[in-house]
Image 1 (cartoon, helix red, strand yellow):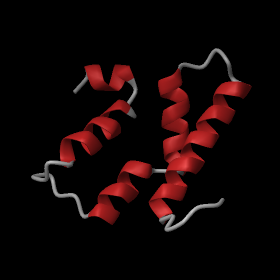
Image 2: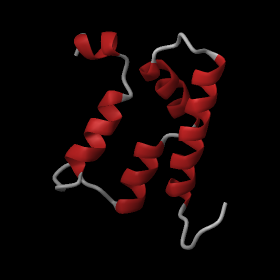
Image 3: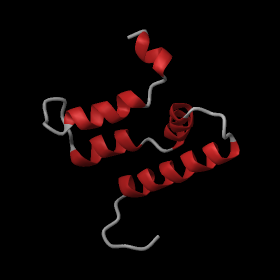
Image 4: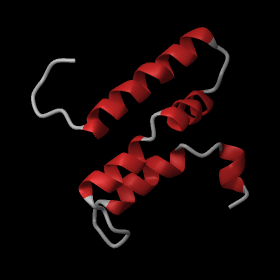
Length: 81
């Protein structure tokens, strides 16, 4: 990797996206949300971003992180919420 001031959560996001693409390439019929969920099990960017930025649930940044995390959940799981 090249660049300046790359933090661990930045690396996690890049690794997550690379793994997600690899999973999709190897399983072209897999739905994107499933590849995303699998990649998130190994590279959990929302968790690291919340920790790094110290985001509280009352923060204005919280809805964006929550939405990203919520979208990681399988549609069937969301329907049961």
